Length: 273
Picture 1 (tube, one colour):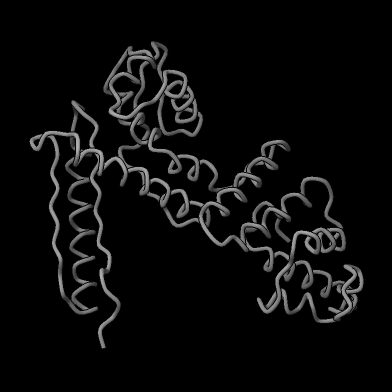
Picture 2 (cartoon, helix red, strand yellow):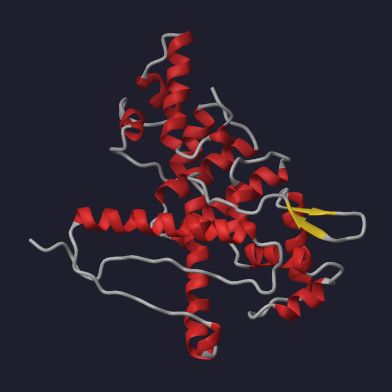
């Protein structure tokens, strides 16, 4: 059975625990429920099937019944919060709790570096900016940024990017990118961070619309009435366009400015008919 820190669904963790016990003994759902103090012999079976939920109080009882100790109990409780979160604010709170538990016990959670990267606009901006400013101190990089960021924040961002293997730092203190492009992937935590990134960059787009001269920004849009099949075709064209633009950026040998390109398509009505 995998360590609990590799799980993203507490129901799957409980099911795997039950299956492992079942393979090596006459363990039943009734036995499991009794250990956790539940009157219904099938309560935990229903939890695994998604028919019932655990509260924080019952999560502690189940964790104890499974013999979890120390940080494992805290991580299990945070996992329950994550799976029951109603919005991104609650999900991020739960993820932060899981990261805190793992960090305090010198445990690495897969995806956390990816989550941290996409959770703040400073990371992709500084990642592009630092190699273009050899010898520049964090304070100078902070001055160049359009949006407010302190020298300390830039320095912390640089430490994270180097530690995560996203930037290299040579003996002279100059930075270079380890890879030209970064994909957001499809992990369980990362989509939440990517949504946060889109929110931040979306607010920057509104700011640019109001405060930048026309020659420094480009805003266009279309309102379309199309079918689901045509929608899928448009998405393919957007994906192709994105790849072509990344190819242009990858060939670039000189950065004169860091830009953000937002590509968005979303419905303005419900389905008709």
